[in-house]
Length: 384
Ligand code: PMP
Ligand code: GLN
Image (tube, rainbow, N blue to C red; front, side, top):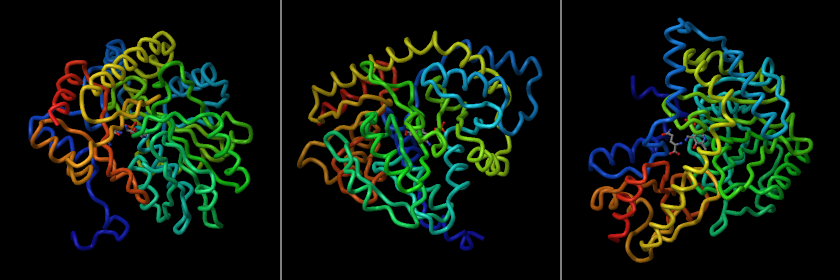
């Protein structure tokens, strides 16, 4: 019976991404809202998925994921970051980064535990903490640089604090956390014996040679960090929904317990295709990055002809833009009018904030779109 729903989900609404994509379709708008490419990923991977199906790789995979995929991921982590994850005991394949986040949070949060989120936060963190009975607390990444105040973070810590969730490169701001910022977070985590869940879904999407640094590579962080990644971002096929969590064996054992009772195992033929993808990743990444950098630069140039001031992102495939003064009431009003009256869908970011009102002053655009889509969408913004 609907009135018997669990208390912990009673305040949950619909995801803003689904809401805006639905409105976009309804108004036949240009969709610069939900984060997904409107072009395909590498055709060789699609071919590999098909070959895997033809080769009868169609039954359940091992719960932790097929070994070749875990091994190839470990090799990439070693080549790019000098990390040394053991694929047997330290890497778990999940249904997207989304499931890795759910399993990690549910593996460690008891009712009443506090989890610190940097806001604007990716909405799933908040919901996962609530689903686990935890209490989210917030540190604001403030405009214009989306930097945080060390004291604001320190002030939140008490005996109930268990986890800090980090996201770099960051959705929605495009911020790539610098080494000195990560060092502050690491120091605080070590001093207070906290766990870090580091969502690095956009790890390969950084621009102008800016380096992505996994916080697990900082001294003292290897055994207190769960690093989460998404192949949907890396290979540009979000609908394949495969992610992974990398962490020390004791953390991994806990994550795998939740994973076992959530999905048990992940799509077998697609895991095979991705094993091929990671084996060939180094050939693929340079063109992948330059393609996205061109799109970012195109979007930034087109935005110069509008009244929306862009916050140039160093990573991810999102741009935050300031809403011009005295035209809209707030971000929700702007996003609603833009999709209904101007035919362009964006994301109102106030839903990613719980403490600060800064979200009301901006909109998020996704630039993982064909050049034509970007031109069409941003030309509509220029009508304001
Ligand atoms: N984390 C972040 C920061 C994201 O932006 C997304 C989705 N785009 C996810 C996690 C979820 O990734 P997946 O689609 O692999 O579940
Ligand atoms: N991560 C995507 C975004 O930020 C959306 C994923 C989803 O719709 N759940 O837009």
